[in-house]
Image (cartoon, rainbow, N blue to C red; front, side, top):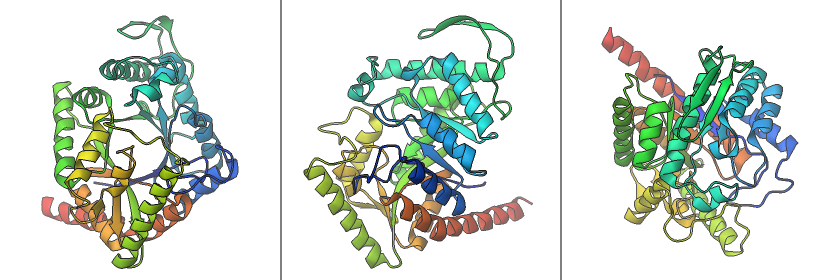
Amino acid sequence: MPVEFLGIAATNDGSETGPRSGASFDKEYTLRLARAHEDYGWDRVLFAYGSGSPDPAPAAAYIASHLDRLQILLAHRPNVSYPTFAAKTFATLDRISDGRLTVHFITGGNDHEQAREGDFLTKDERYSRTREYISVVKKIWTTHEPFDHEGEHYRFEDFVSDTFPVQQPRPRVSFGGSSPAAYAAGGAEADIYCLWGEPLAQTAEQIESVKAAAKAAGRTDVPRIQVAFRPIIAPTEELAWEKAHRTLARIRARKADGTALIRHHTGNPENAGSQRLLAVAAEGERHDRALWTPTAAETGGAGNSTALVGTPETVARALLDYYDLGVDILSARGYDLLDDAIDFGRHVIPLVREEVAKRDAERQRTDG
């Protein structure tokens, strides 16, 4: 099966290891980073969402209008707009990008962050809302006659859009989460199910949970699986581990002086994904071939935070281990966003693609 690579479409050069050098939306840097991903073999980039961050939709439109091949993954929280409005926004962006859009729906795993924009539902209520929201958006994308809707969270009458996506029948839907409520919602509605980087055994368990949820929802297909990591690569193993420990020291320094880019979790995080990352970190620093957990532990399991450390060959082999589990979308984001995107694209992506092509060819010979 083909493998795809997802990078990050950051709007400034800040990260957990260093402050940004300019505005939160640096137009020149945003384009430079996206162009590096396009030039070095990445398939798509994520435009992330945060309550105080630049709006990802116009940022994505800006990149789509300047680049021809790079695909877009747009993060969206259902609490910030009505689904009738959002569906038109997404369809318009799919038009601007000539059919390069995928939408990643974020339910929200932190009550405080959700409350910043007026969302006071419980976590399970948010998952119920997201499931309904996605189903409404899909229907708007594919329905050319006016329709009414009366659900648990949304109600409207006689709506029909005059703006439809390029992709037929519709753009893909991406979704993430590691709780039973998340599996149920994503298993029912997602084309792509996103996980954070855990050891192989735990990842395999989550994949089975997603498959079971899809079956329970009456689907005959299953979502594609995406897993996210923070690669730390260098020409030798020794240099890679030196780089890893320097990276960790810089994260700790930013956390200590109060300049950290992210709001680290304090105590026990609310979302199951972060809880799982902390549990993995508590079991040990190193897992499987190259998975390293101190970066996750230091940030309280905040988001994509487990690292893969080693030479390009080691990291490529580690990614192929996940591919062998059924993961066909590999998400990677370094700590020096631009340079790491170039290095990963230059040194890791070709190795993985070459080996996947060999395995696919061998599988075809065996099947034949």
